[in-house]
Amino acid sequence: MKYPKFINFEFSQYLNRKIVGIMKLNHIIKKIRIKYELGNSYSNLSCRFIIDVDFSKEFQLINEKEKNIAHKYLYNSSNSTGSQFVSFIYQRQHSNKVDFDEIREFIIHYEFAETLFEGVIRGNIIPNDKIKIESLEKEPLFNYTISYLNEIKYIKDDSHKNSSYKSVTGRSFDFDIHYHNIILEASKNYSINGNTISDIEICKKTQSSINDIRRLVINNNIPFKIKYKHLNTISNIEIDYLRLKDFIKNYKPSSTFEKVDTQGVLTLINRIEKSENESKRELQKLIKNTDINLNDIILVKKKGWDTNSEEIGIVKEFTISYDGSLEIIYNKIKINLEESKLPYGNTKIQNILYFMKQNDKPKLRECKSKSSQIKLIKKIGLNSK
Image (tube, rainbow, N blue to C red; front, side, top):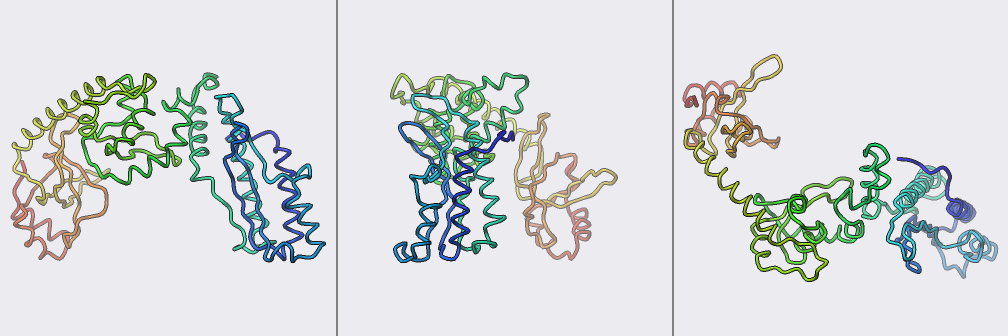
């Protein structure tokens, strides 16, 4: 991250004044809160840095000397450095341009103050439990800013200077920061597996906008799941394309500005369905050529760097490999025949030495070691070849 060449003057004055007041009045301080606000003043959008100080007794009850100190260092907003907060304006009045560097500098200044309070103030001047520091990590404005700035860092030459947020992400910044939590909440209502298409694929292959596709999905209760999150950002969502197809057949965009290519989306989904149906038929043909079924016990030959080993697994799924052959997805089992919680393994028919049907599973349970289980499978199991 590129750091600013100087610390914001107003920020340093504000921070210094607050810290002096805290040090002078630490004996009557009840709570200190380091926090931020997203402000809108006269259509200027800003990030505000705030230090709030509460006293352990009513302000009227503290002595005059303490009141004067509090007014001078903590509350006197008529003072040139006495404002209640420090603003970093990232979008000015009558402008659509977001100053991402200004948001980044706010983050840097905020984290500097956080480090100062954590390392110097907390536990030394003010007890640990009296300081609360609000994290920036859950605020979409900051997360999407950092994600975007990280992406343009890797754009070669100087073209990144003209790389707008939308040209890099395919989405609008306003949409991302306002819809982030809405998408997270909506996704909790659904649990889907298979038959999905990503919003990115839809927009690459049709004349649709990611913003409008996501709005359509959320507003019309079409099931989806969040496929990928990085730095607390949502890069794409996976949509139940069967439900999307049923809905979009009769859908008409509400305005000329809405970019939902209904015909293009339908054509794309039909093409995917046709391809998947062809794959299913091919998979069924391959499965018919083997005697292995789901939930059968298999003995798999594993090839290591310098040795060959054997492991026992239970068949969970059949798929088609990249070369068009049958691939078997299996879960390793323990000596007590419980399934492993490790990721599934995958193999091909030629790597399965023997297999056993479910009915023989009780015999395997009587074995006291892995080696005895392997011997039993080789003795009563069926050869897959």
